[in-house]
Length: 448
Image 1 (cartoon, rainbow, N blue to C red):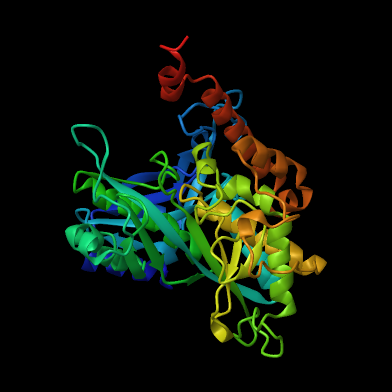
Image 2: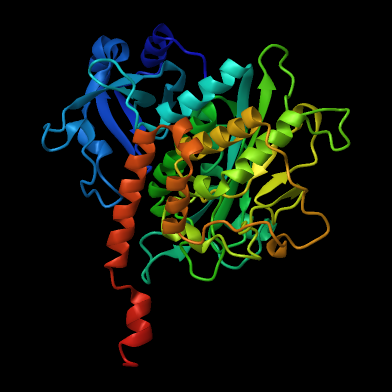
């Protein structure tokens, strides 16, 4: 994201003849929300002073049911909270008529940060790294499906077969690939690569890494932008993890590293180590492995997410790490020097990038502070059958149970936020358990 101030924003608004500014944020269940503000109101008031917003929006689950008493709930009248824009996130939206967009942070009317705001939670974790002398740097690698939204027989994939990287298949959807990459540069997202993936209608993008909050802001912006652009084509872009039975799930692999604030050097690299890994890097990975079951509740936030975490699917199911091993939970790529990093392959595409990254960085920081020892990597063996490695949660209830039991991670993220998140997700599970699925009807109705 750019280093803009309020004067820069006013100049962009004049130069681009902007008439509407979307003030956006996302909530605990990863719904992108916005208010569209006429430009005079935005420049005269909102840009400097902020704007009020109903706290009730932080009380609802994925079906818009009221679950939490945010802002004191019904008893307190669901009072207002304050949205204050972050100038660094301001961008023109070139595909929308005379429209710009900016991310807001959320505060109480007394000026205190709201404890359940995902971006604020990540911000707090990143400040802990700064206090230790490190900056964070990373990017999510997003997979998703694009369907013919209005097809006669329901959602139809925009390309068929399983040949990921096929030039022939990609030539058939070149306009879609264009829209999913080139316009993104205008909103501050530099796509390094885009291709078809291992599912009919599935795509994958790799983004240029960002520092700090920009890592999550870019993923947040990409998802909403992709959905907008595909909708304009009459298509549906979905980051639902497993939209098609028996076919590939969509992940959000997170590549990330730490840099020393004083020197700018990659803190994960040590030329003297036989594998080029610093002790800090080893402790960081060990922290993520130790907290992986609890992290899973944020990295795989829906009931559907867990249909992806299956053996022999290129998604992890065991708590393992290895060098250049795409079956492991954590893969350490070959790159060293300033490119030394890890790839956590746990997250599903439906995760909230702010919460996922906050949980992963917090776990890594805990590993550093406690100097946790790193287990041996998986080497020349099947990562899905390594004995004694431990398994990731097999369902959302299992992941929530692990999160409840993880006091250290809860402390880093904030008990208010963790408890609110659990309450929302448990309500989601309860509604699912009460629902009769198509599978049950097909399996049992005629048989019994």
